[in-house]
Image 1: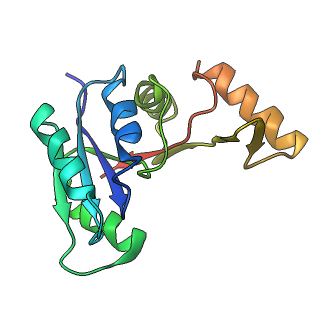
Image 2: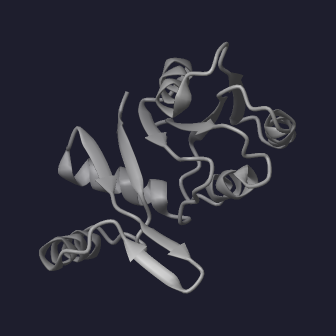
Amino acid sequence: MEPLISIVMPTYNRAQIISGAIESILRQSYANWELIVVDDRSTDHTEDTIREWTRKDVRIRYVCNEREKGPGGARNTGMLAAQGEYLAFLDSDDEWYPCHLTDSMRTHAQTKADISFALWVERHGDITSYNFDNKVERYWLHSMRTTFETWNDGETIVFEK
């Protein structure tokens, strides 16, 4: 059986866009995950939106901070609630490619690394930007993607709990 991955998603006032992030998790080819959405005391309808998702999939849990802690504090709250062997993080305004977790776990298994991460692409209309544009960095990233058969440029951080 695949190890359980706990995905921690900090959120604040994202009722209008959080469903895209959650749907990207539901599309994962890796199925043994739990999603812990940590609400940092939203003042919009974020809780209602997440509660709808918890009714649709038992792997999704809603946690609300007792006080505002910011994104780092929300991540810490999520880590404390996590039950998986591995941790992954996804911001509530981002989305993963469908094989993100599969690629991450394959890379982790092949390298025996303590932490696995990849970079991402941001798209705003017709503008595409990479968070690393240096030619040498791009060469090595392409080489790693080819070696580990990753799918496109998804972002990730996955590590053992």
